[in-house]
Length: 433
Image 1 (cartoon, rainbow, N blue to C red):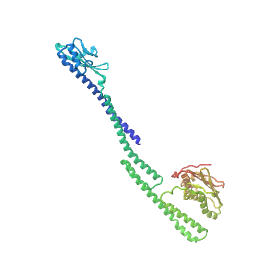
Image 2 (cartoon, helix red, strand yellow):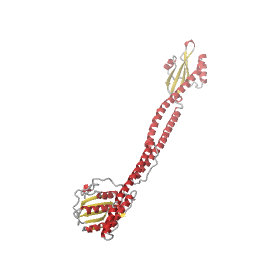
Image 3 (cartoon, rainbow, N blue to C red):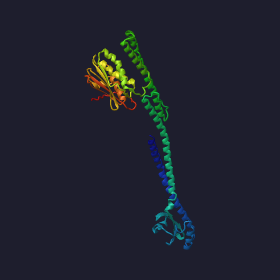
Image 4 (cartoon, rainbow, N blue to C red):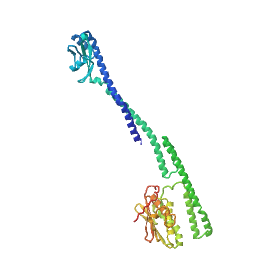
């Protein structure tokens, strides 16, 4: 932007300077020519008194030699046709000059011819030679001064435009940086409005928007926390019914801890800082939680590949939420006694969490990946939670047929991505093997 404004200043100032300097250059040249011709006429006037007094050739030669121009530039054409001094004008021009004054071009300059009336109606002609260097004396230096003035004007305008542009660019850059920080999740960023009135208004509008966004997100977190807290009442009643010991009481305790974790996460301002976790440990913990329900429903299950620690670039809570969503779909949408298998796969730069079941399968996998769309009467958010987690690392989610006869949901995470980016909006895309 600064470069563009500087070029605009150069173009505008150059056009204005040329509009004034070209006529001034022409005037300077004309003034120099007029000055040289006026000097030639003054030299011609110095010989007129001698012509009026005498027409003697010897006397006129001495008079020519005594003038500043000398006999080299002055010449006198007498009425009889005699010429005294160095003449450069053509005879025809001299004949015309006896009737009126003339200035005619000759080799190397101009000849100024002025008639002088003598006695008995005779007319003599005084010729003064003005060389070209006299006509252009001082013109080059004047033009150089004018050119320097034009360059100074252009440089000054560029400097002023650059300072103004720097002020605008700095204010714009601060506004852009603040918008980028807000987009990356920093809700505390604000700017000090500066620059032109329009940018100051934009900065104030940005601060207002940031305050509004922070307020809305805070209200959303409080609402999520309140909704989650409402689950504690039925959990308390359930605890009183099952008593304080036994496997059911243990499951109630785990469920209560999960609700507490949800409430804490909902009230936490901002996103969880970028960190990683051990996917094998998360899978072992979650399978320990779901194993009790699997035993109640007589579901055979298997965890494969979780013996070796495997780092993935996502927080443990988010990976656990995605795994719970996928396992919850298995328990919710497959009949009891239908088994499932969870496999942790390590590849070149990727880690896969593969969950396969022996259920009836998904009739429309593409529709199932859409947020809020479910063909089995649920919320339709489970697969979308897993998809957004995978895409935050540059990975993906695939739905395909399972070797157990049902559905296999493959959650692929890149093991070495840049810090997680904001999740993309839902899209209708299904990759098939």
